[in-house]
Length: 363
Image (cartoon, rainbow, N blue to C red):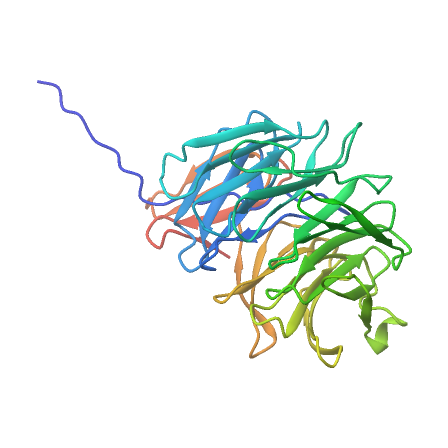
């Protein structure tokens, strides 16, 4: 009688987000603020920030993934890839059953936004015929026209209240506002002198903000888009950061904005006074450039060019935890004689150490 041994998955040492120097990164969270959502290779990772060994991996994309975002209801995730396709799948079950797949653009998708009722999806990125599209989630039917910007669109967001608006940023240095539904071009803003990288509404929809490669962060009124002010650090010669501001996000209460920059810092701003409240200096090396930021009721986290996920402590103004690992293909694996530790090496020569017992990466 032959004996069989059953193997049970005990933990997942997840990949880090895939990063590209000089390009913003997509990092999002679940509606309850407990999980991080990011991409690497052809997969999407749903990672519990309180217990990082718990990670779900969606692997159904045929091309490298670029962005993924939860619906406000929390029931679905929309993920995009470099071929311009969007896949919408069930986020409540481990099987992640596909709801729909739509070919949206002819190039890589850069950002995705859901309407507050989880019925509409807006997508922007690169393409030949268009750089953005808005459609109904369940049927794929067009819900407007996102024309008006002349180069690839880098970011988009829905106003989370009526009257609905869409705001987008573009590599033509502009920020565009659309009204609807059905959505149509309303106006264009020329506040940035270099690429506009990120746009985000606050939770109430009264304000939105934009950031760009010129180091500026601009505040606008949520409905008309009238300029409300600019965030300026006195030590940065009239701008918010001394490097490109790749990403921004609002605090859950809408009173603060966090910005992530190529100057290797993350800054917290008071929206009412438009003053700098706190600065996190992540490091001094090129790999410490900050490419994205996400702020939930549970945590504030940014991602470095190295792929490391930095969990920030607002009280102390320091990095409380760093999630490390690999974001390039792993080429070698070795286990120590006591079977307690595993060592891995990746394509770029980085070596990591993992504990079998603690189920975590060891610095």
